[in-house]
Amino acid sequence: MQSFVELRQRLHRIPEPGFQEWKTQALILDYLQTLSASGGRVEVQTWRTGVLVKVKGTNPAKVIGYRADIDGLPIEEETGLSYRSTHPGFMHACGHDMHTAIALGILTHFVKHPMADDLLVIFQPAEEGPGGAKPMLASEEFAKWRPDLIFALHIAPEYPVGTIAVRPGAMFAQSSVLRIELQGLGGHGAMPHQANDMIMASAHLIMQLHSVVARNVDPQDAAVISIGKLESGVRSNIIADKASLTGTIRTFSDATMEKVTGRIRSIVQGVETSFDCQAQLELRPGYCSVHNDEALTEEFMEWVKSEGLASVSESGRTMGGEDFGFFLREIPGFLFWLGVDTPYGLHHAKLNPNESAIEHAITVMTKYIEWKSGQ
Ligand SMILES: [Zn+2]
Ligand SMILES: [Zn+2]
Image (cartoon, rainbow, N blue to C red; front, side, top):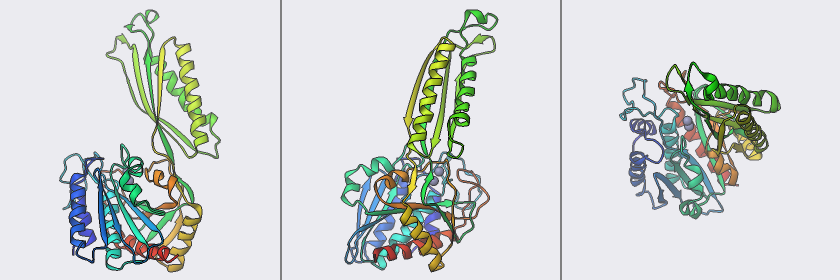
């Protein structure tokens, strides 16, 4: 039997982008083969590049779900580790290799030591984009084994190993993608009065967009508008006739998202009038917020403390996104931060989580799931 640290290192070598996790899927399926000799408790379905594994309970009253995301990121790894990525330009820089190894550990435990309830372990593709949770939830494969409760974790570089941080209620923000196309009139850089400059219009537009969070959102609430990309212009003496802006919007509530997007619509219309140009606005919803079930999360925090399995603290909210929120919108559960103690943050080319967190997480989650199974 391989250790879960070894499995994590094998996964670390083969990071793959969303919906292309074929080698990762093959590795998971290979590993499951080694378990299938253990009493025929394991049933497997694949869904695109994901895998759903059911471990049958001895006397099931419900299905307990556990989800791991499995995709990597388009980042060139700079850790210098012996087991660094063998896929140029890709890296497990968000710890999804750790998540996958932990899920395999939990699964293995319940194959060897069956509990009363059924366990569904979900290996979900494409968390980093375009998003695997939403279409997976809508799939026939998922419907067949739909869990009654669902849990997940995410590695947290800033917390030491042996600690867990979680928050009842909203923990990750919801997001929307913003795209604005401006069309004016090009011309000679020396004759601005004969043209209609879309770089000038963009500059005003961006300044006004940044006033929305400052002046329309309750300071006790939170929102972000970031324009991450602005494309315009050709060369120094040509006035730009077009500009294209894309950005992201983050809020914790639907109401704040509506308010912010409403203001953006008005501002874009205003720029169209004041700069006498054509403006097209496109708003595309991204991930919903991660909203942890309050009662279950509080109960979990108390339980971990009373069992002495980890030091537990209440985390802050993050404006980051996580598509696990789609599961939590339909199924009660929570996602928590697992301390992995490393100086580099998530999505950093030098991220190097402490692998002793793998055993820690497996211990906490197998004991917790066992306990929930008895309820
Ligand atoms: Zn990530
Ligand atoms: Zn992640």
